[in-house]
Image 1 (cartoon, helix red, strand yellow):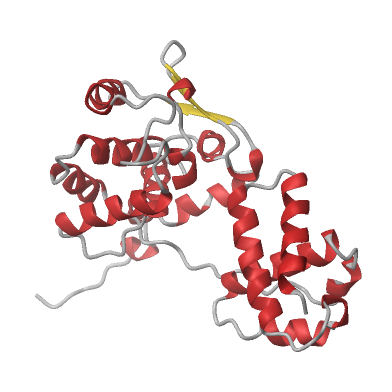
Image 2 (cartoon, one colour):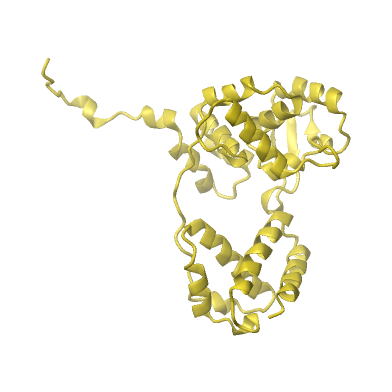
Length: 279
């Protein structure tokens, strides 16, 4: 099987259809793995039994769903074989909830942060819940101080949206510009015009380690933490949906499920019972 030829054609079609670079990279990586494990000489000769067997090899339901989507998209886009997946339903999503950080833990991360760029990274992620790619793609031209909003251009799914520019962030942006004097992208690397997603992740991990936080801390967790804290502060869930860029409010409702403050305030029916404890 000429794997590179099929991958290249798929990538070209995805670009033509204006899929995000991250989606293209994820899908082509999944396809490459799928083709490498196949013994067939052409994708057309791979049957639904082969696909089921491949997908069943993943322990994580969410990982399996990503591969399912990638392979299904290839057959639909490149081979026009939509029926190939007619009898292969997606596996059920994993409902595992993220363990978010408390406000005290976020404060600890700020306390140990002495670098202006690192402080700006944590501040923007936490203040408005950006995805890491949205942060690294952020330009100075996206900051609208007159309307106090940040314009997110071509976020997930190619959608534009706006998030709030909090007053607290402005002096930090000014201080950062005076120190680093970046021109186009707000965050830039030492030898590149744009900061990498991997560098942002390393910054967040290092800050969590310095703060002594034992939870697994990663970039997207700061986004989860931001919106969970908004729920706890009484922000309307529909507003949070708009800030997060979710297509459905059902996705945003996860932050109600992981809010400790909301759960701890639920009255238990045990409160109406006399336990008659022995003194």
